[in-house]
Length: 114
Image (cartoon, rainbow, N blue to C red; front, side, top):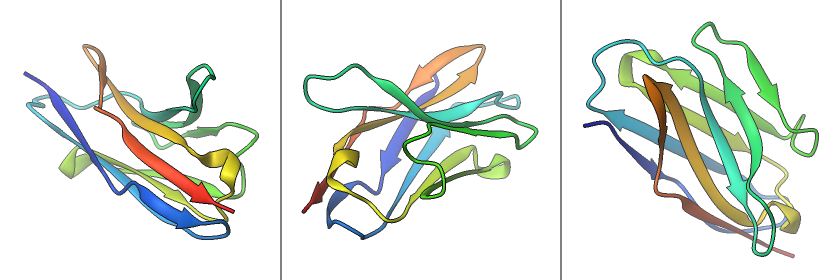
């Protein structure tokens, strides 16, 4: 059984940084795309960033230049480095991995105070 465990969320002041991690267990073969979504209160879940197994990345316009996604294939882990955070980034962040099917993390709260 595949499980994704997220860590790194928390409370930070505007302008600060956080680094999210998402580690998968139960993996035998290589993982295809990994990524992060977020959902703010009263809003739909939106894609933040994703990264293919070849290293190609894709970002939402709202986070370009501030967030960086990366992955460690040996550890089946995906990271999201978030810099210059603003209150609009407040949301629950969910990681996902495409491995046979899409698997989701449990979500981690990121709160940015003004």
